Image 1 (tube, rainbow, N blue to C red):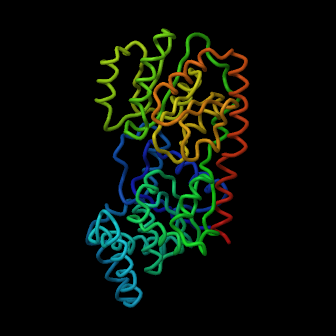
Image 2: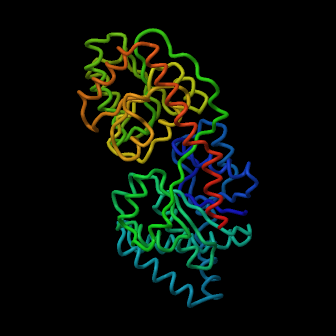
Image 3: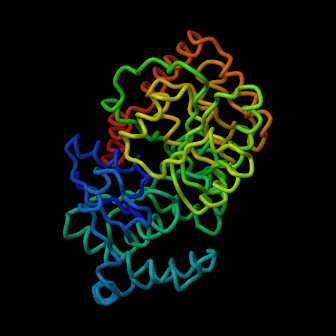
Length: 398
């Protein structure tokens, strides 16, 4: 099959799951046209991301005139159909926070995307996230482009379902993908009952070849690693407060924060104010090989998020044979099992997080190893990227 992937900004260091899905589909014999509205704003440090950037067509780089010409051509070929797409863009724009004008820009992007899809002989378009990429996919289909589907990850889409016209996007799609059962339940709230059967679950996947038999857990004091953008919802400040409690009883504890973002200065200031400089390492964004190395050097992944879908780094940590300490939110409990593969704590509860970190530190080595092995078996069974990509391809082919 020839499939167009419609994305907002791609590639991004935090969106490696999209790259894995695309490449898995390609290894299964499908042709993928990568269409992103713009390049990502974060620096690319992984060679695979650099390769993806080189293989991606960036719609806005074509320029305003190219987009307007595509829209004008679409209008001249099918004015009634174009008028219906304009009305759709107007309705969605009226509901949204970004407004009607932005949706008319999406319409022009969609006309260009439809033209590219026709040239590439793409018979289906798949978007990631229920935001503007899904809007462009929907409008492209309304303009005569290929039928579409889109994957909703959360939590952003769950925060503004009406403004994003999620119900309309679902109703017009061939199918809509949630990455967890929790996500499917949230989408069902905004789709009519007649459309519930088109909401499917396809898990984000790990490349099992990247995760051979895990290294033994390290010796010495407890070492934790947290991976993610430095934004409020990821809860890094909470992790620092928990570390300040933990080091009172476990003076050799250490936390590595992998990532970067708008809150870096605030995080650095909190580290200084809590006198944690000897217990915290900031790495910035690193490539996948470094992430695996950091996981192998840790006793557990720490995920103190306030809002999530199901973080990819949880899957990677479990595949690397490391227990997980995470908050009990969204789809996380579908993968992390309390007492079996890790610890689950209430979001926002610093004391509960610190207590779980201390409990892990005091857990016998053989018990931690058994939890790690159970987590690895669970994630490899449920989140093999080749199996999940095959599910997606089968839905497209129907």
